[in-house]
Length: 260
Image (cartoon, rainbow, N blue to C red; front, top):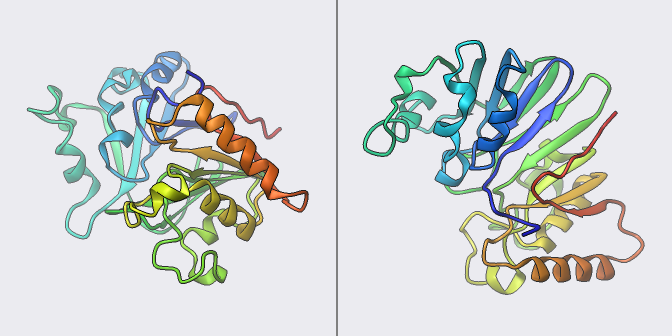
């Protein structure tokens, strides 16, 4: 299996920071590599759908007293992050309660904070429920945008329209690396509009509008085979033409992008 196998978890590391974007099942094996290696880990949740938090309770650094763990995530209109996470980290869904873990929680609202020398900007994006996307910028100017569950075409008369009306535009504008939802084919999207996900064509249009340097496809549909995804990407590259200004890369487990 080349694509898929785990749900969303993306590592961002510098000499001063270890950030994990979302806590899907992919965070579990990654956590094993961090034990005893770092003093602090920041986990940034885009939203609390199960595929983005299902690995949290099995993330071993949470149970290591020598590691300081911070979890950031969006609040809802009625509940803070702690209240929302307790619904998962408590019986009967999980044997260990959130209150028994030595973890610091941060309610995410639109705006910018500094984490380990990195500028992290969050903003609400189109996806069912309280959902944010993240822009991460290093002091040297390197930048990435993480929009794993995103439907910028929803409700737009002709996508893409002007930047000020496009969900996620400010987060993605001009970044070096954009990880963006590409779950559906155009045919699938026709019957799934409003479900919170994008097509590859939507992601490419969004990447062109925002002027990113590289688009990495993300959140592939688990029913799409490796061969199907390879063919889909090859077709997209061939039809995009030589005028396309961004590099198109298929997201896969273990893929590494070095900004040095």
